Image 1: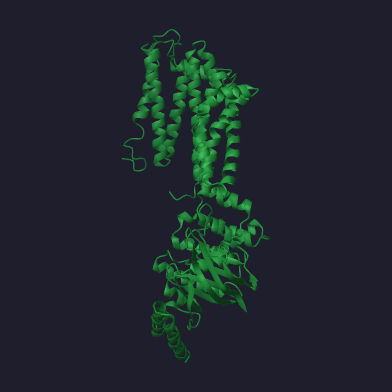
Image 2 (image 1 turned 90 degrees about the vertical axis):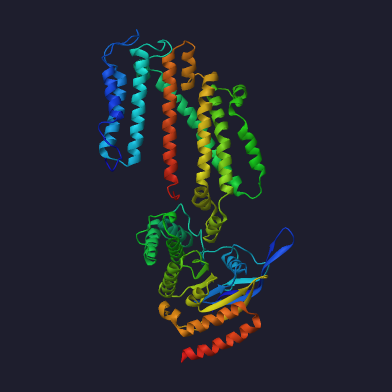
Length: 277
Length: 312
C-alpha cells in the first residue's frame, strides 16, 4: 500500500523578479513501512520537498497524498525531526516530549504523558536527562530527544530533515544504529520514514530505497533500491566489498548524467543478484 | 588561605573591624544638642542585624559570590553609618539642622506613624499603573507582533511615543482625570506601557521561524502557541521593556506625588520639605531607595527563574 504519493509536484517561489522553481515535476511514492532517503546537493529542493509533506509549503501544481488523502497543511499523522530547532529550549527534555504527545494524543492525562515521555527518553538512552533543558544537552542528545518526541507521538509517518547533519561523525553513526533499532522494534507496524540527507553512507546504511535529486530546477534524477539485508550491522556492512562497490556506483550516479544512471542501475542490479547468492 | 572563600581570614577583616569601631564610637560624647546620650539604639540594632546576617552567611559558607556580596553590602552599611555618625553627632562638622545624625533618622523611620500608609499608597498606585501596563503592553504587543499586516509602521509610532518624557502628561492628566490618584496611576501606565509594548512587539516579531515551524508541524493551537512557544521565545526581550518601564514608573510615581498628590512617599517628602524637616526628607529618600531596591531585586530573581533555560 502506498503511504505517500507525490504526483507531478512543482513548487515555485515568488521572488522580486519573477519566480524561482524549487521543485519541478517530482513524482514518487513511498510504501507503508518503507525507509526512503532523499539525497542531493544543497539547493536541490530535497528539504523543500519534505516541507511540502510536513505541510509547511504548498504545491504550485501537482498533488501530494498521504494515505490517499491530499495533504492540507500540518497534521499530527506525521512526526517531524529537523536538523536544529526541533525542540523548544524553554522546556525540559521531558516536557518537550510530553508537549508533542499532548498534541497527538489528546486523550491522555498529564501524568500519562509524562510517563510515556520518560519511557521514550529511556529508549533513546537519556533516562537521566529528563529535567535538563536542551541548552544543557549536546547536539547529539538534543536530536535523541527530538527522535524520542517524534516516536512518542506515535505517528505512522516520520519526516526527518537532515536530522544528523550537525552531529560529529562518531555520534552520527551511533544515532544511525539507534534510529534503525527503534524503527525496527519500537512499534508492531513499522513506520514509514522519509529521510533527507546529503551523506551517502547515511542514506545507504539506513534506507530501503534512495531517491536522488538534482538542482536547478529541483527534480528527481534517480531511484535506487538498497540491496542490503536487515538487520544491518554497521561495522560489518561498511567494511564489506559489496558495500563499497554499491557506494561507488551511487557516487558515480550522483555525479553523472541521467543516462548513465540507467547503466549504473544495471550494474547494481547484477550485484544484487550476486549478494543474494 | 581559605580555599572556599578566598579570604585570608574570615573573622578578622575590614567588616568585623568596622563593626567594632562603631561600638567604640558609642561612649564618645555627642557634640550636637538634639542627639540622645548613651548608646544609639536604632543605629546599633541596624548595624548588629546586618552584621549577624554577614556572620551567618560567613559560617554557613554559601558560594563564594554570595559571601563576597554580603560582605561588601555589610561593609558599606557599617562604613556609611560610622562616617555619618562621626560627621554629625560626634564632631558636629556638618550643620545639625541640615544633616541629622543616623540615630535621629532611623528613630524617625521606625516610629513614624504616617510612613506605612504613604508607602502602601505608593505601592498601590505603582501596582495599578504598572500591572495594567504589563497586561495591556504584553497582550497588544504580542497580538500585533503575531499579525502580519503591521510592518515597521508600529515600530516608528512606538519609538516616537516612547521618546516623549512621560512627565509632560502630568498637567494634562490633572485636567482630564477626576481624582489625583488616578493621575498618578495614568502617568505610571503611560510611562511603562510603551517600553513594555514595544519590546514585546519586537520580541514576538523576532521569534525565530524555526520555532514557529516546529510548533506548526506539531499542530499546536493558537492559545497554546502563544503561551508555550511565542511568549517564552520572546521573554528575554519582553523583560528588557519591563525593566525599563519599571525604572520610568519609579521616577513618575514620585514626581506625580510631589507635583500634586495627597498621599504617597513622594508627597511625604514634598510635605515635610515645606516645613524644612530634613530628618523626614532623608527618611523619605531612604525609604524610596529601599523599596525600589527590593522590587528590582525581586524582579531580577523572577527574570532569572523564568529564563533559567537560557544557556549562560
